[in-house]
Length: 302
Image 1 (tube, rainbow, N blue to C red):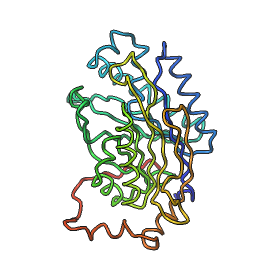
Image 2: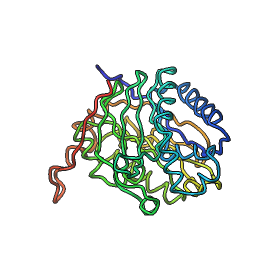
Image 3: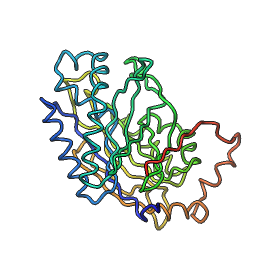
Image 4: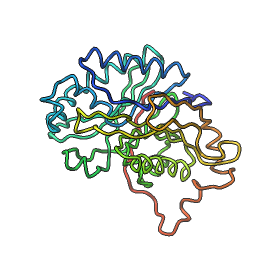
């Protein structure tokens, strides 16, 4: 299947609320998906730990205790993903579901994001490198790094902190990824800018588009996602005729909104050999650069 010429994506600046019931949470998600699809996007990206919002309607005995939050929100994974899959089918869009805890057969918890297609295909990417908070919380590193072959092109997902490590992105790109989705959850402006800087750098190094989607707003009821700062952004290499700044679109810090852009993936491919600079092709010229040994699994969602 040939990917569309333009990669049309909307990135959520998603506010963590305190829904009182499952029905209230579903109504909120359905409204956000409807508004995101109305931008004309083929792909909607939700942020890291967006799933933790579900702990609110499970009550204070759940959301006041981090371990219990992991258990109970992880138990909702299948239903949460199925709900997004139904919305993806209804609106004819791909959706990166807000990530959340998933429990592995060995009892460990990972931070997992699911990519769902309008046809109901589901791909899963687990976070690979843990933050200090996640270590303390009991979230462990998942695997492997994946590239998803979709009707929109080949996509990869680097969850928040993962985007700050260039060899992960490079491995995904060498396996065919032309867009990297970066769901994030940061409690300070400094954290937001670390992920933003990583996203922009990965776009520059690899001649790809990167898409950052953050949680925003305070949720004092939750010790897990109590503070949330950020802005959505869609980034490409700064190149004349593509984007002089490398920013295709960006939101207003901490606003509740969708941010939309259309990227020409074919034009980005041409830049690799015909752009002002050739960062993608010149990668091996770095002192010490070696063929990457990171295992990447290519998953078809076609």
